[in-house]
Length: 596
Image (cartoon, rainbow, N blue to C red; front, side):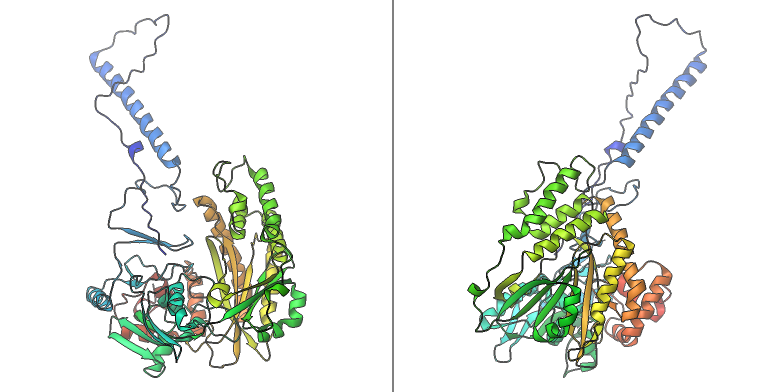
């Protein structure tokens, strides 16, 4: 999903009418002053000139002061004011922003082909001209991995279901189709995707290429559902790869970060469509440890949501509906309004407390939303906006969230594409790491120890960490570039996400939240990642600016992934690097630009 933003700042404050100046600085009094002594004509002219120069300097100084103190546009980034910074942008310049508003680029090249032939022509022409056309999907990746200032190609108009094999439960689609559109397009055949990420707006090409995942210790990441792909490459034209046809490239390119070719078509292995029963209940880490192995083994899907500064762990399991299920047996204790009451009360109290103070939202009583019309995550955003970096305020919000989940315990039934989704909240910074956690038959419990270390770090450093810390599991992937890649079939991986929300449009406040988040992330990185062999999700990794930190990142990636094979394939399939961007070049420098 893309948003175009044209930053236009009027320069009228810097434009003055210097024609026919009529400045009259003389002030009339009731008794006029005595006439000045006679002066020569030259002396009079010089005095007048100095006088008008003084007034001109004063006007220019006032204008400059006004310009530099003029408020930023609502969506402008927090940057030091610069002369002519907000001059109108050219009409052909596109500003592409990721969903969280954390990364953006401006480009004159943003192409959306309507057919495979058009895509092939675009790639061929760009390669001849050495024109960048980085593949970009829905723009949902928190780190903007698909963005490139040099140019981008997007397949949103290539969004068709091409072929369905009901017996084999496979589907061939154009890579621009969104997950929800695909699910809707194949449900009449009685099939669906094996697993889902938290949201449904990703394009299939994008969700596969970054190694996205759902949850379930017996289910692999989503790239494992891919059984063949069609790539439009700059170096070798259009190629089809599968585990039977060029398996070496297939397992490398299946989670290929868009570096080898534009994914044009994908064939996916599906499963029978079925209803699931979701069970949500609240526990604590002590109790979780006692039944962790059972929870991982007995449930098709399971995840834990930890609430910082409380002992609350929200457990969510999902399993196929069975004959014994009856909704009348499991009536919830609280209504949805009763579940929301604690956070409603906190919102009202906080609104009274912060009203009249300088708040990040700068909202007034008239434009404040009606609390009864808001969802839980929307109320949380509103609460955080009052004082997002105040640890005590965030702690109260977390406590109210813990109470909300206690009152939300219960069951619900729905199709897998409905049940497995999760409301992630508003714009946010997020870091998610993946690390091995033993096997299903013998989990090593390092996944829970990791959480204990994160919680201890938060409390010791007094980080204003909002909820939740989300923990999910997958089986391994055979894709060589997947963070869950393993040659051993029985290894399971834990995925842990930490978060900070961006509930305000105020640029300076967003900057402060960003700085606090990166401090939070850096602490987890320095103290935990190497210890647990944890690596970040490709759509959430942030490339450091510091040279030493960048070198350390490159060394870590080389330790975990087949970087030489990755770069060799890039050089063959994309010799002019038209599909690359600054992020890829920094993470995987080729020989001739390693010094960059």
